[in-house]
Length: 456
Ligand SMILES: Cc1cc2nc3c(=O)[nH]c(=O)nc-3n(C[C@H](O)[C@H](O)[C@H](O)COP(=O)(O)OP(=O)(O)OC[C@H]3O[C@@H](n4cnc5c(N)ncnc54)[C@H](O)[C@@H]3O)c2cc1C
Image (spheres, helix red, strand yellow):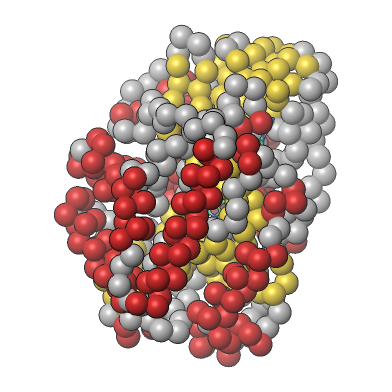
């Protein structure tokens, strides 16, 4: 469920035959847990630095089974936290450095895919974020002003008029929009499957259907044996809570998606998105969409419940209430969609640290490295994580290793039931704030206070 149900699974052109599991104890130089983007990018760049390294990837299911194989395919420069949160904690210079590194990352994903012959349907159309009520329009202006104040013209975030916005994405009730060129669309599953094949062909051992029970200094303990390694890397993102000793590190939040059948040219004349721009509106409970290479709309949103004790289960990938709300929101944005079939519904878990601040790090003494906590912005950020981890492990120092997320530690989430109450309370608060704003056109103070509370 979830993984097999997605549009990406149907269109990946892959037989998904599992690779063999680990067959007993082995010794390698680097053992990495979780075959998603983070791990595969890390393996890719480590190999580039040292072809002789013995690297083993340990994956519980198959490569791409996690969020990397199910996401919205926004290869964007979004980074948690946004520039305001980075500037507040680490200063303006750091905020600008993160912006530059993220801009490079989304270009780097396209470059490597091309160089390695991975057909990921990469198209760089930027992102249009629509303002569809008065409160969202105020937010659009504030976002543009704030970004310019903090990072100058680096982001090239523009405020669009109603007409300019409609020209790009002809949704209903548009009052204006923001636009950034720093986003590309990808077919997410092709990217992660292609990367797995690529690192394997360069000599990395990928063990699938092998569950890590514990990641500790010097070894990864699995169902099928022990992988002894001087360096171990943990990148299990939304599934981290299932590892021994990691229950309160990252909360799994479910994001759910739908996709339409391929839409005819007449429908696209009404909708726009001629350059395959990614699109959203500026509501608090995030929605996101892309026009796929085969002319469908793939559309998703957050808002699914958090499950007690940070559990992840295949049945959580579907939620009738949230999936039908997504159908409604998409049809509300682009009414022509009502004349066409929704062909796929799926979902997956992303990882959220307590302070909503992504991090990457390597403790040379223990040999343990980690990366993640991308809060749903991991497609390009994981590339930055992979490049950075490879340099940290190799002992190099560079602009990347000096970025403020390196070595950052979020505090642990609260024990249950406080965690359940807090996360689901926040979810309801944001949904209610969106409803209030749609009705009144005025910004809901509660949402702003919540954003400040979590440090975003
Ligand atoms: C529906 C959805 C939409 C999203 N949309 C976007 C988007 O448009 N743009 C964007 O930037 N980000 C998006 N994200 C977030 C993005 O997909 C993730 O941030 C990114 O894929 C994380 O990659 P990862 O490699 O760190 O984790 P994952 O891809 O989740 O990989 C973790 C892997 O670890 C494996 N694993 C877990 N536990 C164990 C264990 N004990 N032993 C062995 N293996 C284990 C899992 O099976 C999995 O394959 C979205 C996420 C979801 C769920």
